[in-house]
Image (cartoon, rainbow, N blue to C red; front, side, top):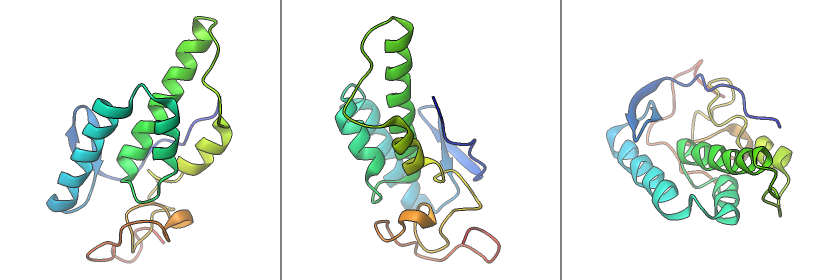
Length: 133
């Protein structure tokens, strides 16, 4: 199974063991709430996790978390020789989240990757030159 490349965006804090990307405190609070939502409300619902991964309005950290939970469900099912979750293509899901932790493909103007920045929340201040696209 494929997985996204390792993240290289600087981590400035952690919430429940999940790294938070560099951004202002107000945005970090929103990201924390979204991480809590993924962990507390939808972590057992594969379809909801897949939809969450695909939602460009959601914070990258939480979308990546949702992806890794889906991957863990699939891996656990395979290891115990149970039917894997279905209704989506894992390679397509990897493609959706693959750039969310990448400095190279990071949008300078929105919170996320340049590939789906039309859906994302705009940044208050663009990232500096040389940081993202």
